[in-house]
Amino acid sequence: MRISRPLIDEIVAHSREARPRGEQGEECCGLLGGTDDDGGEIRSVHRARNVAATWLRFELDAMDQYRITQKIEEEDGEQVLGVYHSHTKSEAYPSQTDINNARHIPGYIWLICSLADYDEPVVRGFWIKDGKVEEEDLDVV
Image (cartoon, rainbow, N blue to C red):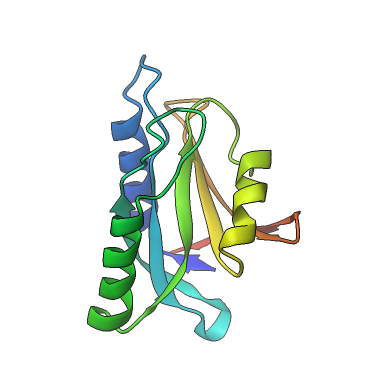
């Protein structure tokens, strides 16, 4: 899956805003727009509110999800490819909560930004299907 460096930087910036250095903060979340042609390309990152408002998990605000989906599909002519969120203190790998929640949005790529090392954030991509996790190589261009 292709993604540009500025979009990765946007995900990292959103993650850091939701969890400022030295604070517990909360997980950030959002949707990814793009195309699935020729291996797929993430072309846009859209911030959403985490209504769970905790560092332990995220829950996309339903109205944000609707509004963003409309923008991606109707205004941008793309499709929703996936979700992104941060892990404030753990590695960039789906938690059991993420795996459980993936049942509700099958077919999406999951990008996770880890701030376990605040100065060296890590963004990784995953497919989660039927409780199984498969890492997707991100082609950062």
